[in-house]
Amino acid sequence: MRSAWIAATLLVLAGGGRAAAEDWGALFRDVRTGDVGYGYELRSPAAAEARARRECRGNDCFLLFAVHGRSLCTAVATSDDNRDVYIAEGFSESDAGAKAVAACREGGSAGCDLDQALCAYRRPPS
Image (cartoon, rainbow, N blue to C red):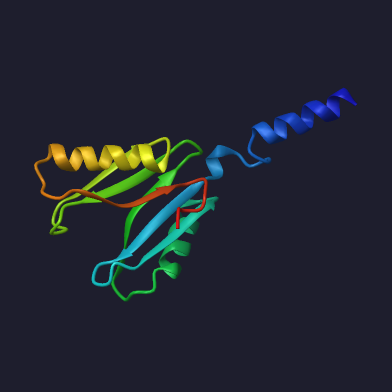
């Protein structure tokens, strides 16, 4: 009985049996329309990118960024005119977002706003 409890506990601690190495995410964005596509909780960078590309409905979609790992998130901040783009990593969407906006402001860009954030291990915020 004790060995079954230990095995169940280890499974929960390991994220339901999935290894952190399996968590890949990607974000595609259409240059003209701003439409985005997400891929997350996938086993390879190619799978994450393929899903994100399919979900991006525009004709001019490109890979904005990819993320990997159970504790990694990435965010993008842009200037008002969308000419300056800053990407930062963190342990949550808000952490990565704050770092990206701070980098944008430190870079001297005007009107820095958080554009997108994604963690490899969970569905993006709506």
